[in-house]
Length: 170
Image (cartoon, rainbow, N blue to C red):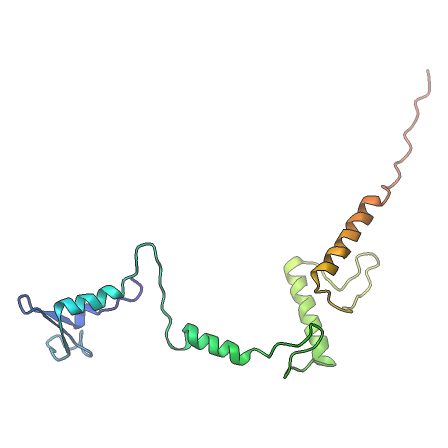
C-alpha cells in the first residue's frame, strides 16, 4: 500500500479484551502511551477494511489542493466565459497587441521548430519569411482544402524523362 490507513506503532490490542486502542499521537517515541481512541475490535476491523480497494481496482485519493473538487473550482474560476460566436473573443479576455502578439507568434514558431526541426515560417519554395494570416478551424473547410490539394497532386503531370539513347544498327 502506498499509504496504509493505520500505523501499527500506534495500535494496541490486548487479546481477550475485544477492544483496540489507537493512539492519535505518539507511537515510535512513546511506546508505553495507551491513551487514544478505544474501539471495539470488530468495528476497528470494519473501518480498516473500507480503506482496502476491490481486487484489480486502483484507487488514489487526493485531498486538499489536489482533490477533484478543488481542482474543478480552480479550473472554473480560471476559465473565461464562452464566446457567443466562434469569431468573437470570450468576455474578459484581451487580444495581445504589438510586441506581445509578436512574442506569441515567435513562441509558437519556436515550439514547432524544436519539435519537427523545421521552421514553419520559412517558405518551402523561395525560402522567404512567411506570416500567419489566419487559422482555419471549421472541419468542412479543412476537408475541402485537403481534397483540392490531393486532386491537384493527382492531376499534375510528372516531370519529363531524359531521352533514351538510340542504338545504331551495326
